[in-house]
Amino acid sequence: MRERLHSRYGITCSDDDLVRLESSTDQKFSHHVIVHTPRAVFADNIQAGRFVAAWLSDLTLAAADPSSPDHAVAQGLQVVTTASGARGFFIDPGTMHVTMLV
Image (tube, rainbow, N blue to C red; front, top):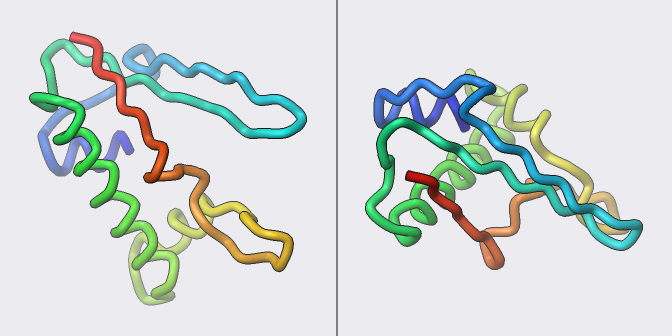
């Protein structure tokens, strides 16, 4: 995500700019990352959601294409999501919440 923010918007994020919140239980995985930058990156949550959706789309394509320079990274971000062993990303765009701190 940091690389995508940098390549798309020229914003460099360090670990100090990330707030990680973890509230997993035995029944669910729940991990949130809040990016706090000196200036606002997105005008609203709709724009932020579009950024994440485009990023996930690019990761999905890269994971499926062994010739992609991002193939290994994309595959590394995938997790097993079903009992049959199907793989996907741990971000659920249907319930995605984007938080911006300004």
